[in-house]
Image (cartoon, rainbow, N blue to C red; front, side):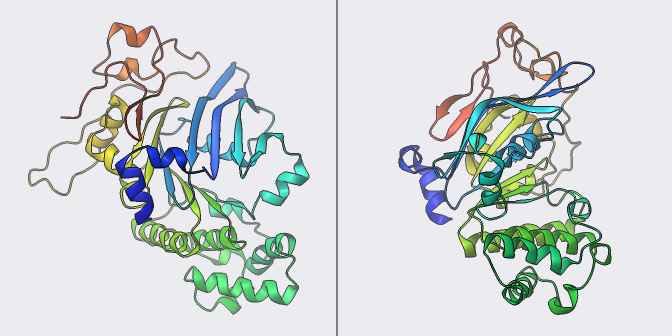
Length: 342
């Protein structure tokens, strides 16, 4: 990760010559509802490089979860539909693969940790059965090999007495332990890309810290790439290499962690950072808030979707949606004004 930090921190030249592990191009997703068509994701593009952790942050409804669910084509269809774009992984456009071809990639090359482990685990199957199934399917392990690997995985994620725990059912585990099982399942086939969709949302602060540290350790040991989805910008400070900020289905800012925290340039990012409590301030002041609510994605505005909530907005902001443009190496922003945090 040190090498990546040096590459991302110095110039965009190194990023240009590195081959992305995953590349999303102009992705758009719609949902057909009784009220109309919801523009859930509106033409986003980004890359994930080998060994890096990419954080995607945004409030509920910003499209961050839908954008990563589309990578493995897990969007419920109907009502959801990918209307445009490409998703390239190891030279293959995942959107053009058939079900059988995609099945070989799911769980083996790309794995996912879902937000709620209780609904992601099958309540009528033992933990052992759910852990060994993927190992036997993807790696062709025998029953004994899969059992031994499952024990090793549970040990790796810090679950005591793994031999006994393999015989337990999901309801016999706490929320934190179930999430550890989900991590073990995701890492079983040593994937090249791990997608974590808000895996700490339902956990208390102590368990959150344990899960984050566990993923960091396993990432460093296995050299995999990670996409971490969250609404908590503070959580990404010690976890991610680069961060995408999403709002109303589009990327409004993209930067390295250092750039984003030091010189945020989009008003939405500035607002998110100002709403975080600061431990380095002696005087405790009231936290800032972002007034207003996100736009209706059925009736998408012609201008910048954040303009009605933006204190820096000018007339042009309500007339034309700004493109995501590079303002400095590795730093892109979609804003006509480009304010600086004070």
